[in-house]
Image 1 (cartoon, helix red, strand yellow):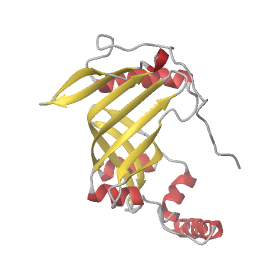
Image 2 (cartoon, one colour; image 1 turned 60 degrees about the vertical axis):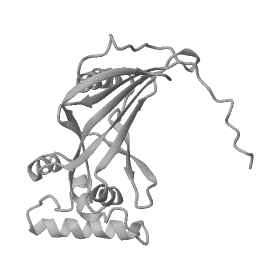
Image 3 (cartoon, one colour; image 1 turned 120 degrees about the vertical axis):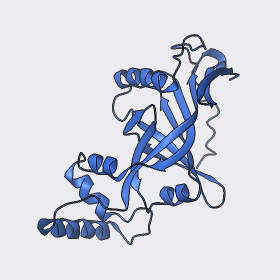
Length: 214
């Protein structure tokens, strides 16, 4: 195999620009503006983002999750409460989310404290999911070692049989988290790597913006 030299891969940006005077007062409103724009240009899973948490060895770990709701109070995603990310959040309840929308040459990074959403909120979303996903939440021992895929399929069949005679409910070990942002950065690709970066920081309950060098 070769050395994997990819230094020659590059792209010059220049679709849009971003300034302190062009952004909205609230980072949530600005996020919504860019999110709606991305929905028109990016296609499927525009809500995909990299969620980064802190592992026991103090090394950050990232994985792609799907954002399911956002509002002024924060950004919500769902997972198994016994998964590795959940264990990490239990010990260090802070995380970051990174969104990247290639066609619009935009990135959003946000960070803040993470809390579990209420059981009522988790219940409501759980029963909006397709049946296969509902059963899968019961069947998958997320992040645990399993012998093979047949093991997983067998667990799904067992869950199906169980809920033929029982009323389906949300597993106690599955539900939502909300990331409550204290900082949100909007990045717009610009020519010659002189990118536009506007960051919102929460200061005494108010959002303050500043421009960062690329």
